[in-house]
Image (tube, rainbow, N blue to C red; front, top):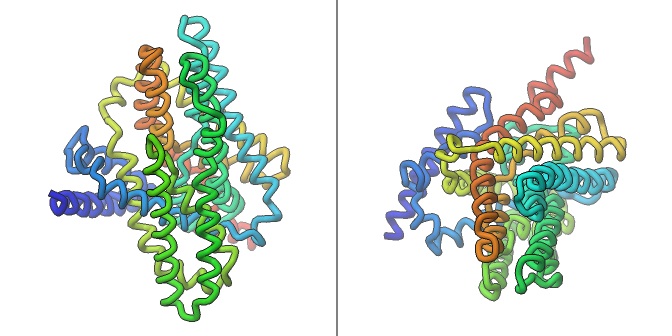
Length: 416
């Protein structure tokens, strides 16, 4: 049975790869092909990626390890000496785009729910879910199309910080709502632990790995050491998850923290040698991660999407764009960052579905009707928003002139 499931997964990867190539021929990001392939091959359509496969123990372990590995793509770009000049700008912009989204979505739904008789606290749960940004789609465009410029350099470190801010706000909202509607509230200490634990684990294992990698004298030994310590990092994550009532550790964030520490402890030449070998593995990991995002999405929800779904998508986009614009403006970021960064921050399906599952579990007992509203709205929004978000991220990089052809055109104009 396991061999059959592995065969199914390999076939799904091959199909997604071909779909990605077809989409790239149309000058669209490959990730859009991977995402649509995941939806078509998932349990709600062809069922090649069945529920039994997606919920299998070996698959969840493999997927978590790959999440940790894909974190290398982000963490290895966070070289302190290279980003410290724009550190304030990145932190401020991350906070403003996250909190801006939370405020806009919460305010819009708060007004709607107030006049329709729906509990207003549900609006804050919508806001808490909305501020989450899934970095993988935009970062895969960076990786695939080799974007370069102020928007790209701002987005990469923001990807690591955004998850922290998003998780902190969401779990705080969940704790407050849970305390309001139930006697079994979530302790604040647990909230903070769940948010920062992956980062703390990654920092510790990354520091140990950095010390060991400094002793390595050949590219082969460096690669082996990185793989061993990366797997050990994931292993610590699995162990910690086993101690929790529900596995909630963010393995992508774990890999980001681990690789950020490593990247700042070893020579750049050593890091480049390691990443030459790891980049193809990261590429395969990205395909599987996007398949995993797309497979649970029910394409039927597109046809059943209602007014709440449309309002959610629009208000979230406004919050992301205006929040990013404001943060970039007050920190005097380049004009391209002000105008186009927001377009690269619209994706959020994977993270939002995790948050939605937690919200539904909190609401299903004391307020089942609210659980249905939030589940139906976010599920439909995840399908529709993700397709829009990938397209808009690509356009954002294009309008900013950060695609290779865009940069070339800019140079030609200047030389003229």
